[in-house]
Image 1 (cartoon, rainbow, N blue to C red):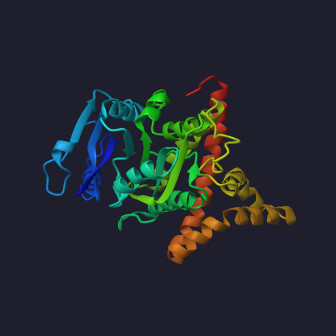
Image 2: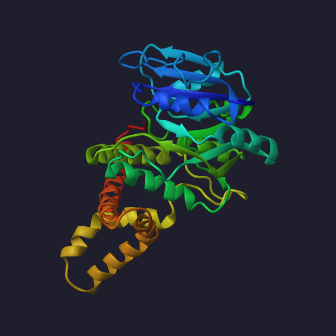
Image 3: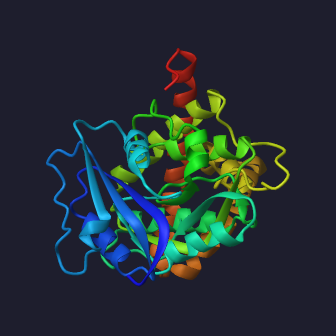
Length: 337
């Protein structure tokens, strides 16, 4: 690492020995070194083995490790890291990402040059590891495409795989909601609260990280159900995308056509087996709603893989809709979290 940037990188990690070394190695080759790297071991089954003295790792004097006695979720882990950070800029990343070489430098530069911003948001790269499964590549394409569709640099999106915020603003907002105990909507809710309070999140699509997570079909289904289940409960608690913000034209990483497709997806099987023009209308509308994403898949994957991912889109959206419905029912029975 060459130059230095006044940034504290905070990495919550639980049972992340398989990926954390790659994350640290990508920090070691940043064009600007962070002031410090704070790793918060969120009650790993076996305490994390931090390879601080291995070749290709960051300067061990820049690394600090906090070990929580039990797993309390990423919100608590990030708050714990922020509480001991020494820098005025906090950069939250996950323990399963590889940073592009200029992430730290670009992030620090934005806080110096973009007027009035409180936070900077990066995106997932379109690339995945060569060994990535079809479900892993699909999930990565889904998020990359969603972020690339956001037309404005002002957004209400907070995704902590690569999210930086000014320390005073973070403290003012009270950090992440520690009542959200699982890795679900703790970051999304923080972004909504942040922009609702009048703060700006600056989205830079050139700040990228590569995701190392691996998904099977069951992993993907369980993750999407859990996320949508908790997303709707967060919305019902009143933590919603801000409306009427003069600068923020984007309010969620879901585009309107994607949201409409999610609502329509469960009805697709009935339309397939039904007869008459109404069935064709449902199918054509569903196709039109997904056309941009499917066109993106067709350009970026071999035809056979693209067709599999188109099928996964329906599974994904049906699961999301189910999670929204069941989460709403659970909230109405008195389970707010």
